[in-house]
Length: 182
Image 1: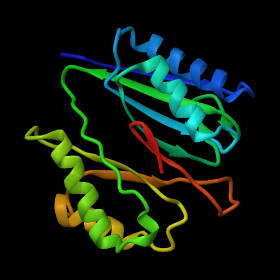
Image 2 (image 1 turned 135 degrees about the vertical axis):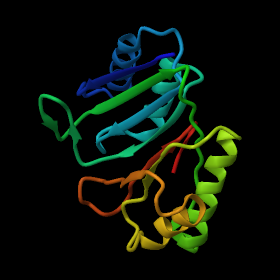
Image 3 (image 1 turned 30 degrees about the horizontal axis):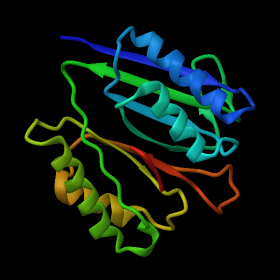
């Protein structure tokens, strides 16, 4: 049993080229023909539609999650412009994903509860070990959303997440789930 992880990064000014470079580097590092999960982090310089299209072209049927961010922390630097792609291929881990569209117009407690349940349903009967979430960084108060997660998973379950960002313009952030950007 093994898990292979790759990380790719690019700052190419052409969004399609940058995403292809990052996704290709990440996939090559895994040394696997297919990828189970791709996590995308990109600054606002790269439009989500171009980002998703390029990742899907390189990584095929991989499950995709991620968000926009103000910067990307790498082992050698913190970059304020770029695209990072993390790829995972594993025969011991499985991934359930879900999304809630138009979350700003919903009751956040119910939305958190629904998001967690949808992720569990997507995973199926496999035991859950953790929950990684990307939420709209423009949420004024994320506490009810997280409380909704806790109602489903419990308060001792391992969770980690972040709010998407638009480089502190506070106008439009994006989160990725499969073939959609929200």
